[in-house]
Amino acid sequence: MKAMAIGVLAAIAMASLAAPWIAPFDPNALDIANRLAEFGPTHPLGTDHLGRDELSRLLHGGRSTILLAVIATAATLGVGIVFGAVSGYFGGKVDHAIQSLVLLFQGLPRISFMLAIAGVMGPGPFTLFIAVVVTSWADFARIVRAETLKIREEPYIEAVRALGASPGYVMTFYVVPNLIGPMVVLFTVEIGRMILAIAALSFLGLGLQPPTADWGIMISDSRPYFRSAPLLMIAPGLCIAITTFAINLLGDSLRDRLDTRMDGHPVVL
Amino acid sequence: MGAIAAHIGGRLATALPVLIGATLIAFLLGVIAPGDPAREALSQGGGLEPSIEQLAAMREQLGLDAPLPVQYAAWLGRVVQGDFGQSYITRQPVAEELLRRLPVTLQLATWAVFIAAFFGIGGGMVMGYFHGGAIDHAGRVFSLALLSIPGFWLAILLILVFAEILQVLPTSGYGTWQQMILPAVVLSSSTAAMLMRLSRAVMLEVMSQPYIITARAKGLSEPVIVVRHALRNMLIPLVTVIGNHAGEIFGGAIVVEVIFALPGLGRLAVSGIFQRDYPVIQGYVLVAAFVYIAFNLLIDLLYTLIHPQIRFGGGIK
Image (cartoon, rainbow over all chains, first blue to last red; front, side, top):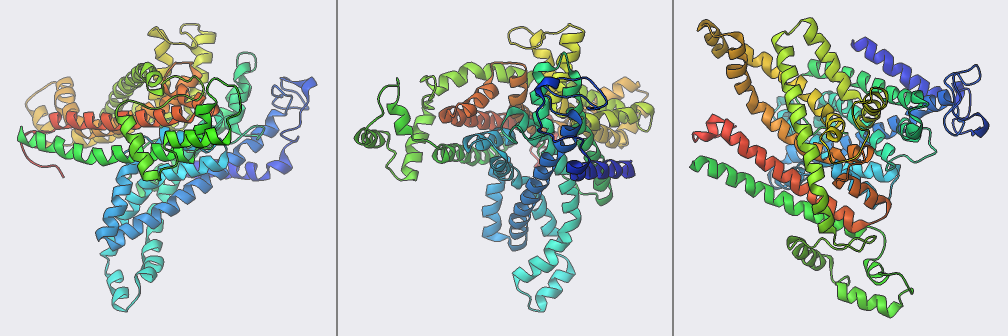
């Protein structure tokens, strides 16, 4: 199962990276005369409502969402590591202050705030990125703090401190490297949710913007034609589902192996 | 009883700062929003471009020249009295519009929570009871697939199948219970999937406990063991998780409301965003936060009722 998941993800990554070279057409090239074309030799999967080649758009469609999901998850993780590690390592007043913030952000409905923050700053990928980081960092910080509390008690930390290392040095070279294992699991689990959230917000018009060839936008574009041309709607959805399914499979097996418990807030979209 | 009161009191004390934090974030959203509320207030009814003097007077009148903490206090005072401001577009009070739409979203979310709890816990128990078998295996793949499918896509697929091909359910709209089925199912899908996975794990744990062996040794029938002994003990961990999800379901209703054309809060928020109607977005955030916090408190109350350790005066870890 795990090997299959990695294989599928590798194939998706390769196809997305190589899209500009392997796609038969420019994903944004219009051909109104050939709109909503059926399968054929020129357009293997037909064309959309503006005559754009469906296969080329599908190949390009994962690039923006997956890239944005990777960057947003990495940034969220970064913020979570800084707050969580500082909170767990230093304890005391710093810990108390950060934990109050974590409690606040965990006590708020994530999607509602994500939507409102992205909406007020104006729809687009950058505002979506900010909205995602602001609303998601608290779960990460809480888990990193718990891990840091465990690491802090390890004898090697005591040893380095006895040698006179500064807190910054201990954090950078001893605490953070030991967080990598659980963080890899967390990253994998979170990125699946992130892809779904970004796709949903792009579908609503609040994330990536048309005419970007993107799976979420393609589903939204094809909605008026879903009776006559259901494939235009089904194909990009399948691409998202397969990507997320493979990531979730991988996340499950990693989680079992590292035995890290994390019941973060779900993204219900 | 004292223990319960103390527990609830403790929870209220932690909920209050979160509520205040939520109002602070909602207020700051209004501050970072582009546009000038004074200009918005003056351009009411269209007409002439307001002069600089008029703008300055209106800024003074609205208190926009005051430092932010003072503005926040004034704004919070109005919010507490139920004054959420006026829509830039309709010129109607935002609070009235929110109140009109709240029942739709609450109804949708309630349906979704019950569907998710019923199928999620039921499915997970069956999987756990027959663990290792074909049902268990199929259920695990099904639940993971359900977690991986974009909800908005599932919604369109279900419309295609049930409304267009089979023609058994309406495509969209609000008013009848038939119109609630598809939206509620879609909204419940990821929570149901998550509950299936969790319930399966909890079921496995519970079924290996000594009290189940005792129940079997007493000669109780399997249905009685599963419902009276296993399910009861499973509820404690599951209720907390359902509580966490219930608030997220309320937020996730946005997408479903847009696709199924339900006149709920989420659709109001989305149209507010596209019309740059910032008071509406602020109001939506406030209501969403309030419902989320209230829901979690309600779940806590339920938790104290089903958790014997709290009921009888012990603490919980």
